[in-house]
Length: 173
Image 1 (spheres, one colour):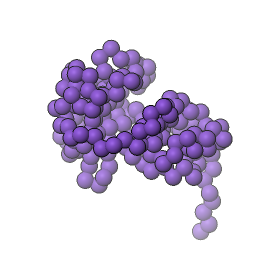
Image 2: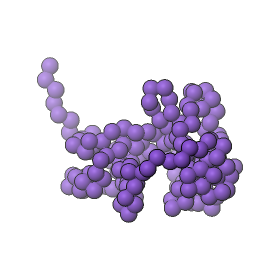
Image 3: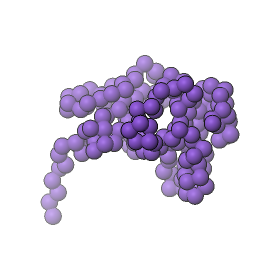
Image 4: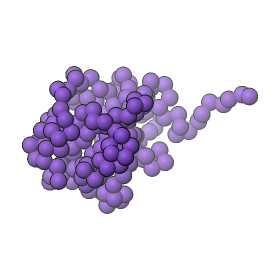
């Protein structure tokens, strides 16, 4: 049987060396997600913290097969998820793939005519861009270059208490 090379949007990540990293689920409160992803499915806490630049708190749960899920909630006063919650009410927010060189990936995607949003290249430890959901069957794809040093150990209680990495000090609802 002869295989044909894929064409169209499915080739958007072709040649980027993209490696699947995680899926992200957003809710108004991370605590509402824990009964499913931690208690029922057995996810164990890996890391987490706040992103005051964008306006959300997140934590990552890991599973025995190496899979990871990011659980996200807005920080108090943040409007980051407002449009997403109005449209979807919560749920799958994005799917993340990591690349070694985000600038090269962005150049390649621009050459292909992809619609990019949320381009962030200023921080040498974390760079990201999103491929618009209209080109990916409704899924927001994140490409990220991660050069962050290891984070200090925290607990899920630290993160939800606002004391995780870059913590704002404000506890989750």
